[in-house]
Image (cartoon, rainbow, N blue to C red; front, side):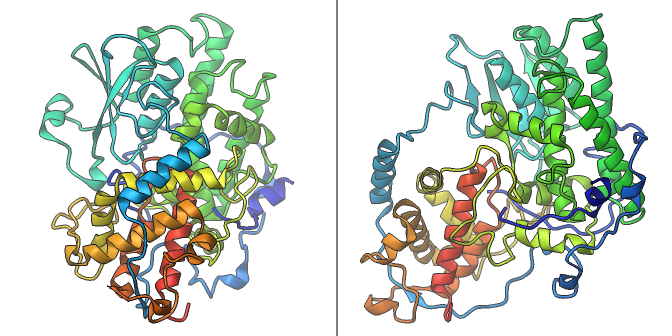
Amino acid sequence: MAAARCAASLLPCPPVVSAFVAGRKNSVGRSSGAAALRQRTAAPTNAGGAARRRAPTMLFSGLKKALGGQAAGLATAPPVQAVPFADTAPSWEELQAMVEAKQRELDAVPPPLETGPASSYALRRTFGQPGEPVVKLYRDHAAWCPYCHKIVLQLEEKRIPYVIEKINMRCYGDKPPEFMAKVPSGLLPVLEVGGQVITESAVIQQVLEQIQPDPPMLPPEGTPERQRAAQLMRLERQLFSAWLQWLCNGWGHESNRAAFCRTMDTVEAALGEDEGPYFLKEFGLVDITFAPFLERIVSSLLYYKGFAVRGQGWWPNVERWFETMEARPAYADFKSDHYTHVHDLPPQLGGCVAVPEAAPFAAAIDGKDGKSWRLPLGPLTATSLEAHSPGEQPEVDRLQAAARLVQNHEAVTRFALRGAPGGKPGPRPVAAPLCDPTAIPAMEHLPAADAALRHVAHALLVGVDTKQASHAALPAAAGGGGAAAEHDGGVVIPALAYLRDRVCVPRDLRLPAARQFWAHLNWAIDALSLGS
C-alpha cells in the first residue's frame, strides 16, 4: 500500500460570475518564489515510507506523447465552423418567472444572505443578531486567498456578525488607495474592529477568539490539549512547506514526493490520536487552519503531479476528516474545486511545475478529456476525481446555475463578449492574465451572445431533451431546422468558451452547479458547431 501511494494512480472521472467571473492560468514552469503564500514555513518532517521513495512515477505513459507531455491547461482553440441560429429562447423576464416557479416547485428558494446559511455571495452577515456588525473583514474578490478563507470559516463557525469589503489580490488588479492608506503592505486578510486595523491571519484568529469566546475554538491555556494544539499548528506549517517544496520545483521530484508523503503520514497519525474525526476532541481552530491548505493540496498535486491524496484509502483519517468537514455548512459553502485552485495558485506562487504523468488528470480537471464537462455528467461522490462527499442534486444544481445566470445576465453577457471576435485584452496586464479586469468586450455581438445565453439558461431550467423537442430548440444543423436564422454561431462559440473557462468556485457557483453550467455551455457550443 505504501509503494502504491507514491505511484499516484487514480482513474479520472469528472471533476459564475461576480459579473457572475474569475480567471484561470495554466502556469507550468519553474517557480522561484512562493512568497505570497510562504508567510511562515517550517522544515519538512521525517519518518517512514522508503518504498514510496522508490515507487515508479509514470502513469498512463501511453498518453504522454499524445498529450504533449505536460498538463493540458488552456490552449487556443482551433477555429470551428458554426451554424446560424434563431432567437427562439424565452426572454430574460420569462426565464426569471421560470426560475421562481422552479424554486417553489423544488423547495429551493434561496435563503436570506444576511441571516441564512453560509454563502460566498454574502457581504453582510448578522446571523439574526440585532445592531450593526462591529467587525469588518477585507478579503480578496475572487476567493482565492487561503488566509482569507480560514478567517471567513472562523467568523461563520463562531457566528460573529461581520461585513466584507472585497479587495483585489495583486496578481489580478490594483488595490484601492484608501485600503493602502490603512494597510501599506497591501496584504490580506485584514480585520477592522472599532477603527483598529489588524493584519496577519494568525493574529486575527486570536482577536476573534477574544471578541467572542463562545464557542471556544482552542483548549484552555495551560492545558495539555492547548500544548497539543500548538504542536498541530506547527505540523500544518510543516505540511505547507513539504507541499510547496514539491509543487513548485522541477528538481527532486522523487525525494520531494517522499518528504510530502512522510508529512502526510504524520498528519494521518495526528488525526487518529482522538476518537473524533477532528484534530482535537472537538472541532476548532486547528481544523480551520488546516482546511484551506489541505483543500489546495488535494487539487494541485493531482493536476500538476498526478498524485491523488483523496479517494485511494491511503490516509483514511484524512478522508474521514474531509467528509466530516464537508458536512459542516460553513466549510461546504466556501469550498472551492480543483479547476479554480489549480489555476489560481500559479499567479500567487509564481508557477507550479507539472510532470508528464499528470497530463490525464489535468485534461479531466480542465474539461478537455471529452467527457468531464459534457452531458451526461458522471456522478459527483466522495470517490470521484473531484471528491465531494455531499454529492449532488442535478435538478437543483441546474436551477442554481440558471438562477445566477438570469439574475446577472447583463454583466455575464458583457463578460462573455471579451472572448468574441473583436474583444480585446485589457491595457494593464496582470499576473493572472485570464482574470483580466480591464479587457474590452466586443459589444457589436451583444444580440447574438444574449440570445445564446438565454438558450443556455432555458436548457438548464427544462433539460436539454425537453428544450430540443420544443419550438425553442437551439439548432444543431445549418439553417436551424427551418427556423429563421438570426445570429451567427461563429461569434458566439468563442464567447461561450471564454465564459466557461472563467467560472470560479465558490465565488460564482458551488461545484455541483458550476459543473452543470460548464456542461450546458459545452452543449450549446456543440449545437452551434458545424458537423458536431
